[in-house]
Length: 331
Image 1 (tube, one colour):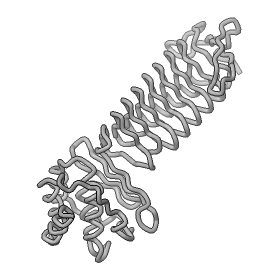
Image 2 (tube, rainbow, N blue to C red; image 1 turned 180 degrees about the vertical axis):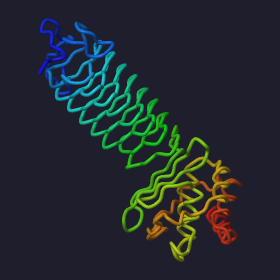
Image 3 (cartoon, rainbow, N blue to C red; image 1 turned 90 degrees about the vertical axis):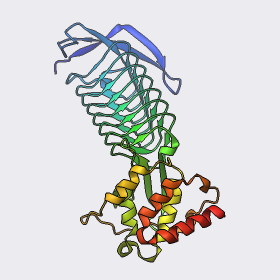
Image 4 (cartoon, helix red, strand yellow; image 1 turned 180 degrees about the horizontal axis):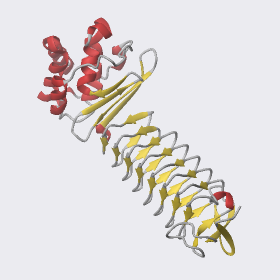
């Protein structure tokens, strides 16, 4: 096999890894034309051994970037500026890691994903499919960021699935297997809520704000859609039986009191939505809605839009629901 690069034994640096072990890294030099910007004789960044950078494809390490330990850069991925890839991380596809970014642990950066500025990706995280992680953000744990999603600012994805053009910024922390997708835009803790341990199957429900000002809901493995669809879904007595009203109050309390009070677009969505007959709506939401009571909720914050939304959700039960809300406010 003809090698595309070699290690320069006269150009080395020594660095300490996370365990304070001293490692020797070698600058690399192209032996053939590797890509348009890496002709024969070009010097690149630093790697510890040939296992760190594939001898196949257009992958390359530029500038003062460093790849070491058991990390691997392959296919057409590139690492440049002062970026670091270490531990058992893998960078593949046409991914790019640059700036002062750090990729470590068992993280995988795939396809056209980009990690840059001062971002950190670690743990067993996967960043894939045109996703971008930047700023001083962190993606770790078993998290996935994919499908043109962006994570930036000081946000931290500890355990979540961020996809479908979603944006997570600010100082938000995502944890608990939270799923944000379909144009979600999360810049404060009040832009989303994640509830786990629901029902006998311990399902998880996430509600989050979107770019168009509406609220999306993901529940277990059986529902993904807008708040309007979700509320009609849980209001159908043929699906949930006699406890629907109590279940609905519980959901409203947890979702609407935690998130923004501007639900005008959701009210329109409720009025215009209809259930999809092809969707499986077979799971009950709550075994005991009273388990979710929260006496600390400030019901003075429930404005006219809240009550209008409640009325839209429950239809013919509007009067009884309004009475229940008044009772909550008086407690």
